[in-house]
Amino acid sequence: MKTILIVKVIFLMAAMEAGAQLLPSTPPVVIWGAKLTEPRNIFHTIKSKKFAARLRPLLKDHMLIAYLAPLLTSKDLSCLQPDCFAYLRKVEPRTYYSKIRKPVAALGTLLAEHNQELVWSERDKMLHLPCKKGHIYAYNFQTQNLTEHDKFMETVASNLTACQLVQIYTAHGEPTEEIERRIRRTDQAKGRTLAEQPIAEPQMQTKSQMPSNISHSEPIAGAENQTTEVMVFRHPKAIITLSTIVYAEQYSAGVSVYYKRQYIRMTDAVKFDIVLRDPKNIKKGVALLINTTAGNLRLILLPVVGNWRIYTLIFRNVTHMPRDLLFYSNKFSFCCQSLNAYSKEGGRVSLQSLSMDVVVADNVTATDPDYIPKTCWLCAVYLTPALTQTLFTVAILLVMLVFGISIFFNMGQNNQLPNGNDPNPFVKSH
Image (cartoon, rainbow, N blue to C red; front, side, top):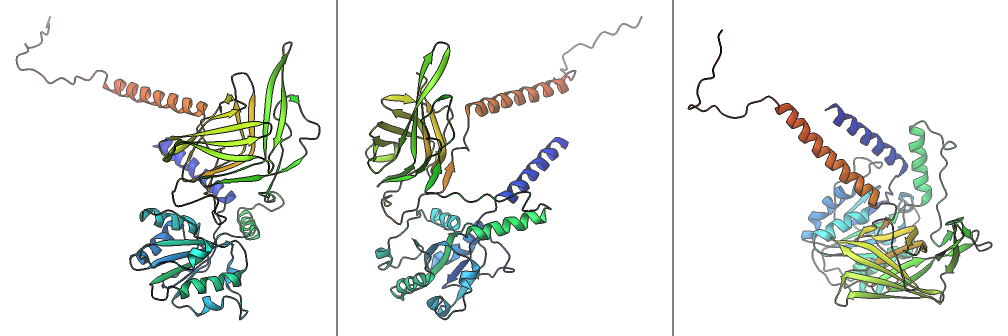
């Protein structure tokens, strides 16, 4: 019992430390068309599961439309100018929540319960929506023009006047300044100053810096200090972003081993395509093809119990295998700052600033400009062979330990019932 208590305390301390460092984004939410339970105060944060539970009864008799802006704060919704949210101010009943943790996750929960998928509708389709009870539509705004948002929501609602409609206006996240302010408050509450733990500046998603080196080799002059652009390649069933392919070819000089590296930058001349293992079912496997002037790359994904496994990378007709078991759920996209694979001949391929999303749904296309890739599954979270062997060894040792302890405590105990036909034991009296 003491051991279990110590383990619980360790996990609790780790969770508290992680919670202080990774504060989730909590954008505000406005719901009109229904009056829901008000929060205890404006500082109270409602979790995704509780928010989904409050919306769930509305889907029995209503259709739900969710509008998501890129960024949104409570200050934006408290604008006092007469032209700020002219339509939103007039709609009743209305419910306002100042902090909802991951509202998109709550919508995903409701969609899964109704066997639906999160599909970002196009602008033209939003103006001609049919009235369907229990159906959820989602629209993603591309700009931060709040007045334009208000006018568009009014136009959509005017076409559904005969429908019992519930509309939600929220955002994917908060501005970085809001999150930094909350981190500072958390650090001050724990007795740390901002100077002791500075907040790192957010990295731009469109730029990436090449690493200083990959191995002891012959680097290209100035290649390490160049800033390269991340190129986005789209296909109806997949989307991939990549900055550079680094190919290292091994050669020997005496007893020493060297690598000759080649940097292949992504440009507009690069072609992207996919090949399905089964033309009728993308879930049975897919190969992502990146055709460059320096060689063709084939990245093969195979299904494993509802997950994707990055099986091999074939570059210049040479098979390269990742040393780690790279799995990720098909409900996520895959993101990795540097994905490395190795060949039997000693060569290696490194994909820099890689992000890819495979579209499984039949009614969704990645070429849609309103399509937003799924949440990232970072390559730093995977089951390595060393970890697999460690878990297997620990499991065997625990089984042996339990078995040995049970045998130890059963020593000297007679578990057989006495038999009436057995003779009385002979006892020598003298």
